Length: 365
Image (cartoon, rainbow, N blue to C red):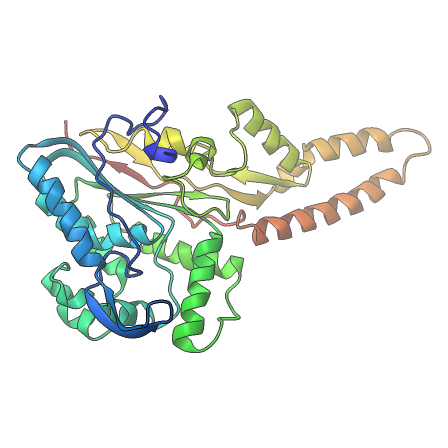
């Protein structure tokens, strides 16, 4: 296995856990219970069953039969991609079903960004409203096709204030963007031409912003287009500023210095994802901070002491090189502009105010 499923990896914080894996191929984010009037050309059938909820129930029942008669030292609920939505809608039910000393919910790589008017319709048509999975407060809004996944996740946060709830996402997750456009095309009749990497990042930030209202929510954002972190070995080399190679603190400092040459800098904590996850779940009295790293412009004071400024000042003091300073400043300004545009397009430029400073301290001792 890869990621958290690589139980031979000594760095895996969950290597000694008992895993219960819910298989998935129903296309209903583990919440469906419906028979669709669809025709599958390869099998010639008109009725297609979407029974992700029934499938999930069987796995949960197995876990209850085998583990539910004891108090668990640690319960970690995770979901990646479609499973990220699944774990959000199942979180409250599962936390109510088990006894535990410490628990956490990790939603990996599906923040819940949908075209307008789509997410409630998809859940209602998929049969979620009739399953009894959701709290009864959602009965009317679900059947009205207006359910918002974020509301369901926040309901679980409120119900379990001592449990840690998290999200892990790439700022410009290419699969989430593609799925958004597939839904727009099939359910709204066309692509959403207003959606680009920047606007997608803003939509994600708006979801994180509302979740941040709850004390027990923290998040981890990576400057990346990657989709899914927990179930792939990218888990072991991800920092908020880089998912390409496994970097040491010294290498990250070198990257920061290289960026400084453009007149920009990283701002925010650079904790590796693996190190962050090694703290999950939390014991009473322990804390965890959200992680997000953005690219920002250097202020006037910093600019005056930058490497580029120092070099150009030294060269321009050489007789006959007086014009070099103006030339270098022009080039530096252009490079900074290009770097700023690249940072924005790559999703690196934005961290929502207060996101990276959010800390949850589990009540206790």
